[in-house]
Image 1 (tube, one colour):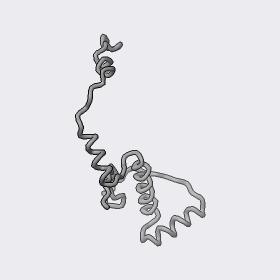
Image 2: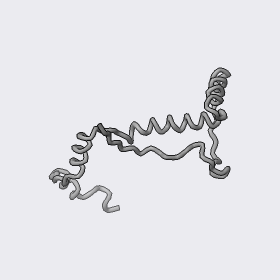
Image 3: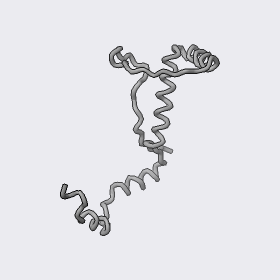
Image 4: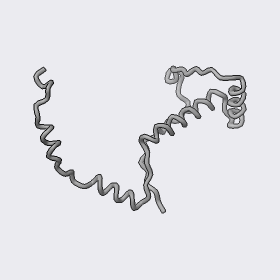
Length: 109
């Protein structure tokens, strides 16, 4: 069973070798000693330094949050029905046409 996904996620790799000029922005955070130790331990286990680990985790989390607003998944039969609705001709809405034809209050300015 296939699944169709519409995904607007970034394809950027936060750890890709961008030059120093491209990485001129900074993020600063304060943490407890315990949190720092935890992050450093996890970074070592992932064969990264703490900055790389935090950056990768932050980018992944940001993309996940934004994906909730830009991504959805449908099974094939629902995808077919969805795209059929998108492809059908628009139908007339008389009240909308009437509103579009009315003079707007700021037209004279």
